[in-house]
Image (tube, rainbow, N blue to C red; front, side, top):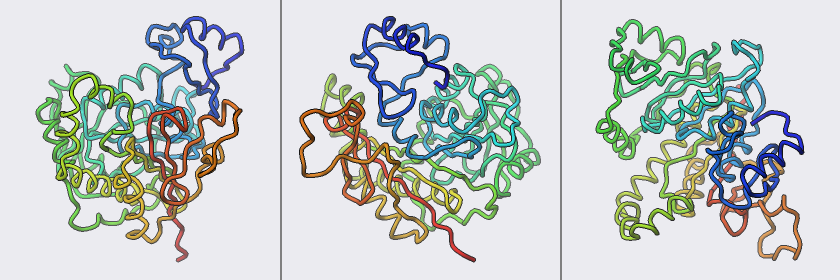
Length: 386
C-alpha cells in the first residue's frame, strides 16, 4: 500500500515473514522469494499490505492510472485489483472524498458471494471512492459517478430490478423494496438516464448460481445502444474476463490434487468453451462501449488459449472501428523473441513477459515472467472528429 516504506520497514517485514522480498518493476510491489501466509503478519493485520498475483498487478499498471480518473472494473471479484486501482485514482487521505481531482472506482461482478469478499477488502483497508454492483457485465449500463462515493453497499442490477443492499446480512433481510419512483431517481443520478429499474434483494446461493449461469449463457443478438451521456463514460476500463483459468497456478493445482477428469468435464467441454468465448466478446464489447473516446481499456484472462485471448481482441478490432491496440507501458515491454536471454539479467528484467500472437499483446507465464499465466492487451478508443 502507499505509505513510506523505509529500508528498516522492509527488513522488519522480511524478518516477520521469514523470506526475502524481491523488488519488482512496480513501485511498492514485491514478490515473496518463498511462499508465506500474509494473514498472520502484523503488517497485514494493520492494513498496510495486501496480496495480489504479480501478473494481476501488471494488468492494473497497464491501465496507466492517475488521480482523478473514473475507472470501471467490469469483473472485479475478489477485489485485489479493485483495491490497487482505488489507491491510484482516489485521494485516500481525504475524510470526505470531495477533493476536486479525486476519482471514483466502479466494481461489477455477477457472483454475489465474491462481491462480499470485495466489500470486506474495501472495509479492511478503509478505502474510499468505490461502489459495487452485483450485475451482468455484458449488459451493465451505469455511468461513472459524478458525485463523491460515500458508501460501500452492494447494489444489484438484475434485468428490470435493482437492489440497494445494506451493510450486513441482517439488515438485508429486513430491508424493504425501494419504490419504482426511487429506483428511477437513483438511475437518473448515476446512469445515463436508462429506463426504469426497481430495487430487489437477491442473496441466496441458488439464485446466485442461476444468475451466473444466465450470464455465461448470455448472447447479444444485437449491439447494445450507444451510451448517450458522454460525460459519464469511464476514463479507464478493466475487463479481466471469466476464462478457463488454465494459466492460473492456483486453479490448476486444485485439479492436480483432486482429479484431472473434473477439468476435462467442467472446463474443456466444447459447448462450454463456445459459450465462454461468447461471454468474453460480450464483456469486452460492453466495456468498450462504456469507455470514453481517448480512454484506455485493458483486456486480460488467466488462460493460455488463443481463442480466449488474441481471437477475442481481433474480433473487437474487426467489429469496432474506434478500437486500436496500443503498446503497453514501458515497464511491461516484452522480452525479445527467438533470442535467449543473456546469462545474467537484473531482477527487474526477470518479470518481463513474452509477446502475444497479436502485435502489442503480452503473455505472462511462470517460466518467462515468474508469475501466473496472464494474457494482456491494451486498447484505446480513438477520438472521432465531429
